[in-house]
Image (cartoon, rainbow, N blue to C red; front, side, top):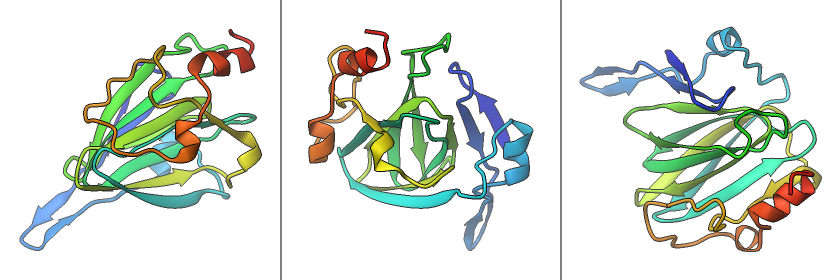
Length: 183
C-alpha cells in the first residue's frame, strides 16, 4: 500500500495495490500496521459506516468539537469529490482546503485527522462511501458549515442536486470561526 501525506499535515492518502485477474480483483482496504507506521491509531472503539448518495448530492461539511474525529474514508462504488478543511486553531494550515477524487477504480483511501471539516459530492449515478471512524458518534459535538458558503467558495464540479435539511441550515464559515474564537 502506497501512503502519501498531503499539503495539510496529518491528512494522508492510502493507495492499495489491487490484484486483478479473470474473476475481477482483490484488494486490502485497511491495514492497521501500515496505519500505525504513519502515526494513525483508530482505536478499539472504531466504527464502520457507509452512505449511498445519488448523482450531485453533497454531504457535509461536517466536523466534531472536543477531541475531534479521525476517519478513514473510501468510495467503494462510484466516484466522489472529497473535500477536507483544516479547522485546528493552532495549525499552520488553518482554513486550508484540499480536494481529492475517491473512486472504485483507483481505490484510494483518505485519512482525515481530528480537527477537520469533511464533505463530498457524488460524481456518479450512485456513490457508496465507507467510513472507519475512531470513536462513537456524539451528536452534542457536531460541527457543520454550509456546503455553499461564499467565503469557502467550493467549486463543486456538478450542480448540487440535493443536501440534507441539516446541511442546508448549517452555519457559515464566519460563524464557525467566531465559535472557535478566530472571527
